Image (cartoon, rainbow, N blue to C red; front, top):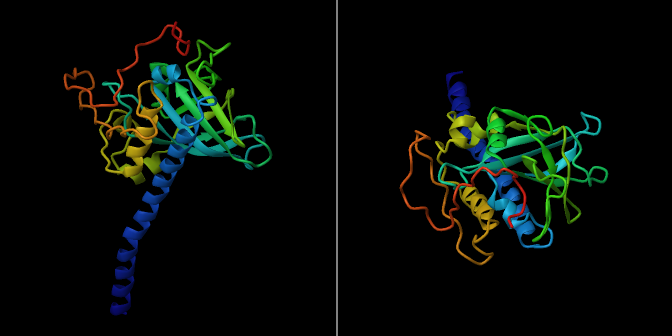
Length: 271
């Protein structure tokens, strides 16, 4: 009996690292897919998010493979990631999230759709950080402009600009009623038990994940002056000091962008 119990405990102990590795793989897979979505969009200049809008972004969320949810009539469901600028203007380590409800448009039957959200105001990012965020209610949302010279017609004062891609077609789309929720379980599985929303968005969580580095580099590459498809990658995100209000005097590394100033008309193309 004692030998059987010891053997069972040994088997359980050996399985724990395997289970942890599988969980890590799932999170990495989500980041890799999100990176691929951004890369494919960046390499199609006539269908991507305009560089001037990315320059004004306080945060960027990518939710790949959003599918029609059978549990809600007409609803949608997907899991994605979001990165937010830190005090120095660099995009920091991603936070995992889920998208539920609403219709993302351009979906045919049960076909999946990639969704990209550009947060154009500080307030929209702060509201998301409270845990749950409803587009059209917590923050105004508009179909985002597409292409090099795209303009946010009819939505220049929106806080969030939304896009979807289906069957290779990338378009701006309205997402009123769609909820974004922080995926606390996945964040803890990836970063550890201290991975609260405040700690992640505040730059207090560290990771050596290559998938994180590649995702951040792809976001940075979409900015004006960002590295090209064959250029050097953006360095890993720098953790924000514990006191967010403390000024930073360290020089920004190559590829970093200045923190965007609050825009009276966020999303409007500079003249």
